[in-house]
Length: 244
Image (cartoon, rainbow, N blue to C red; front, side, top):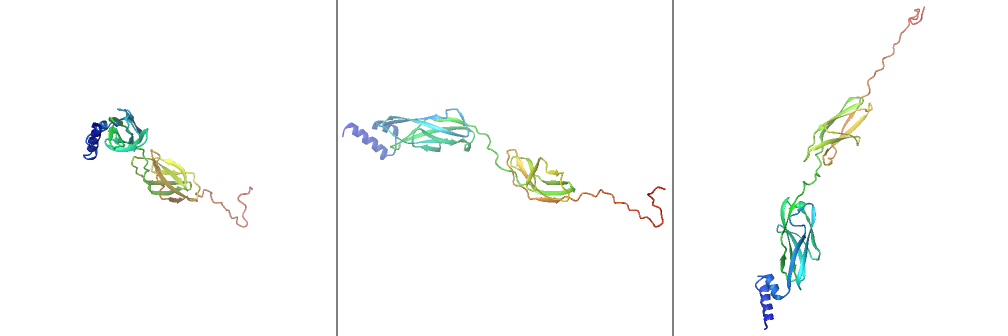
């Protein structure tokens, strides 16, 4: 057996029989080359937020081929790509704000893994958007106080951030907004029944469902017409309204 075959057999025995003891020296001995893995984006020391691409390049020295490139954040797998240009998307909103380390690992056709130099980035995301609506208002009451006015009141709603105000609906149509937990609906018609609901909203525009309805009927208007005066004239008496 010549020297080249002896080196090949020794390296192959080390890889198969004993596990991958020293992969890169073994590859060099086999004359197959090496892989140089570089994270090209994001840049080391840069801030990131939202969803960003993580890109890597692989330079091949020799006759090796790349099986896949895996991307890690703090040692946790983000994703992998098996075709150049190698890239994955990273949703940074699922990661705590602060400093994090990215690495890329290329695996060649023999199963040998080649690591990139680490890249450190700073995740800086704002608070997540508020998508939670306030609780439904309760305790709505409606009271007719005149033939043209009905007063409403209800119990304040709660919200994970804070209630900004309330929308008032009459017979299914919004008629007003208010920051209070009461409302006076004026300009109504007498002897008419009105149905009301209210809904709470917050600063993000989240709107609760409408409350249970409350109804009231305006009374008839007061009678302001004086009664007519009737004078009965006795027989034989002069008409008191006539002139003499």
